[in-house]
Each structure stands twice: as structure tokens, then as C-alpha cells.
Amino acid sequence: MNPKSMLKEGLSDAIGFIGGALIGYWAGHLLGLDIFDPGYSNSSIVGIVLVGLGGGLGLQIARRWRNRHAD
Image 1 (cartoon, rainbow, N blue to C red):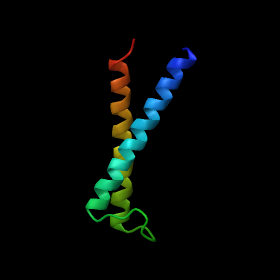
Image 2: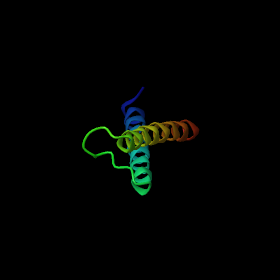
Image 3: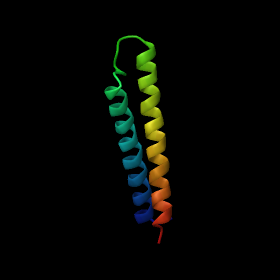
């Protein structure tokens, strides 16, 4: 694996994960879920789960995009 393809892989994974996590965070925020609530209330846990799911889905989308555009 050459350095250029490793850089492309790392950047696309990072962008996909962070983008998905942000979408999950804002979706939870729109639903009134605050992941930064003190303690572990049900709403904060559901918000944290949304961030995790968003990050995972974003990562999978980035990997599928990268595989589809492989040279």
C-alpha cells in the first residue's frame, strides 16, 4: 500500500466518521437530547447512542464511497 492511498483511506475514514457523528449529534439536539447532561439520564444515553450510530454509519458510507472510486 503506497502512502498516497493510505492518506486517502485515513482522510476519508476520518471525514466520514466525524461527519456522521456530527449529524447524529445534531439529530439528537433537534430531538431535545443533550449528551452533555450531568449524570447519565435516559436522554443523554440515547443522544450518545445517536452520535455513535451516526459515526459508524458515516464511516461505512465513506468506505463504500472509497471502494466505488478506487482506481
